[in-house]
Image (tube, rainbow, N blue to C red; front, side, top):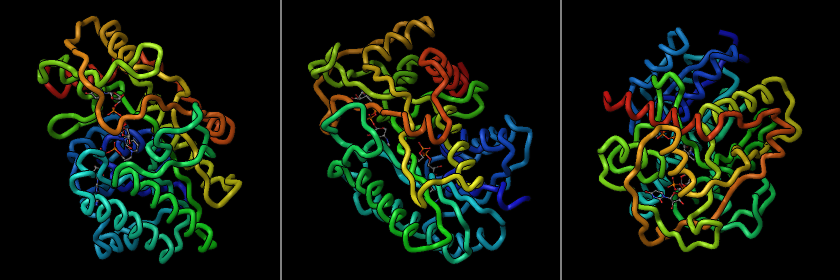
Length: 342
Ligand code: NAD
Ligand code: WQD
């Protein structure tokens, strides 16, 4: 393994991590996956192996465990880490804030510390559009001011971004990129990997696909009285394979030594706002089915609208979202059918 072409993926058995592993391998990188499987299944790594025809080094490791993590840094040579490992349910973070601060921040700090100890160069961090909160101007650019976090989950993203910025400033050898994902949806076209939410999904698309599969009776549309064209919230839904390719572009930038600053931030979205009702009607049309749904009160904490200005990622990473919403929603339904054996 060439260390400059090898990427450690923490949380690589998860939704975005598994898709990113596939795209990195397609782009000529070797990957090593670590995950504690707290929100995933080892079958995802097998899915990556089936898609790529490659055996993936995979270790069940908790990134909060510094001894186990050190073992990984001793065992493998890699210049780049993509750190996905985190808990991600906003509502759960309100009920169990300490669990979120502990897992998301301890695991991140352990990774950064190991990188500094072992002189590993590049770290890519999974941040989120949640850091923008209810932005004053839309679409949001990377310099749109962050708003005070409205959940412990969102706060862990803001704090981790700041830790990364400070460590890159202080440690000569360390380079960091934070990617702020908007709303990742869809699945690999093979339907061998996809999103596997545990319990009742919080996110829109898994709820839509589970409703279509008959697992949920009816989808609730949270509010149709927002100040938006059809009254439902606007979001920037980014296809997970496109998102995975944005990681490859960011890793290329780091390994090719093309960064302009030691710490950089990029929005990863499509730049197109889509309403909840538009998403539902598109899902129905492309998959030729009817979705039972009803309008219910607003969900507390939802912002009316947020979507990305993607100019920076387009120009600096040479990356652009390519897959259409139609194709993405077809892939989401294909994956749900695969998981349910339909
Ligand atoms: P996911 O839950 O599918 O993947 C995260 C993976 O990390 C899981 O496989 C989980 O088992 C693992 N993990 C969690 N804690 C760990 C620990 N301490 N040690 C080792 N492994 C651990 O989530 P995802 O949707 O793939 O998200 C990946 C990252 O992207 C997360 O950091 C998340 O906050 C961020 N993000 C996700 C979204 C989204 O909507 N999916 C949006 C913005 C940002
Ligand atoms: C999308 C839209 C809901 C479910 C969350 C996190 C964010 C990021 C992405 C991690 C909203 C509506 C939803 C349902 C609905 N994750 N909706 N019925 O809230 O934009 O972002 O995931 O970083 O931090 O907050 O995504 O998929 O939950 O909701 O009407 O059953 O769908 O109101 O307008 P959200 P979402």
